[in-house]
Image 1 (tube, rainbow, N blue to C red):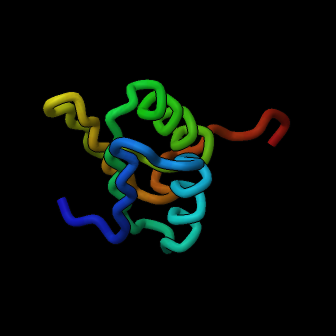
Image 2 (tube, one colour; image 1 turned 180 degrees about the vertical axis):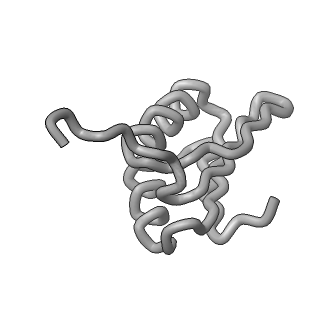
Length: 84
């Protein structure tokens, strides 16, 4: 799948969530970001962050210990706020 932005967090990656958040803010709604990491904890954090921010993880692959997440900006259907 084509990605509009790629964030490589394989090996030493300083402040990976800050980098991912900044790169996602550059994208327009509906554009695609690819995140690669060899840290399973970071992959889990990215999954949770995506859900909390309304991004949809469209693909996820693990090959040779590297997780690749493909997510679309603001594509997830957000639950209605209580009282709305």
